[in-house]
Length: 118
Image (cartoon, rainbow, N blue to C red; front, side, top):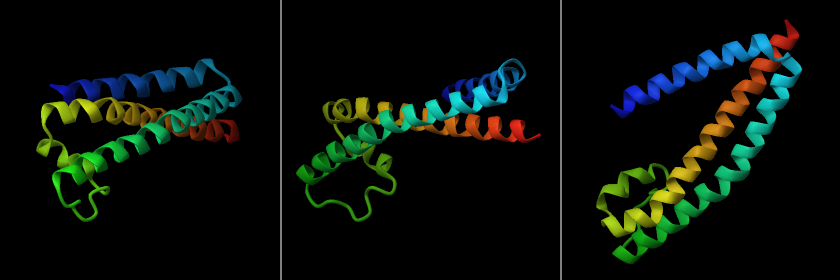
């Protein structure tokens, strides 16, 4: 069910992006994309970093830290207790929101530049 919701949200986002290109000037669209990119990075990098710090502390408290745990840290979520998951969930979600904003802003900036060049 969540996959369908994410797919529908992505399709709506793409549709809105296409509509905004016809309403908003390419230069303004590019600037909005850059602002979204910066906001996403400013919000996502610190929260994503803190998520990794908190997860690392939890994994160290459990024993030996698995090698290369940071490459795919969500692999270790199922090993956590519900209390430990509550500690990392906020940082995980906030980091994901920042990542999404940064990617959407970067794509919007690229689209604005491409349309401006045409």
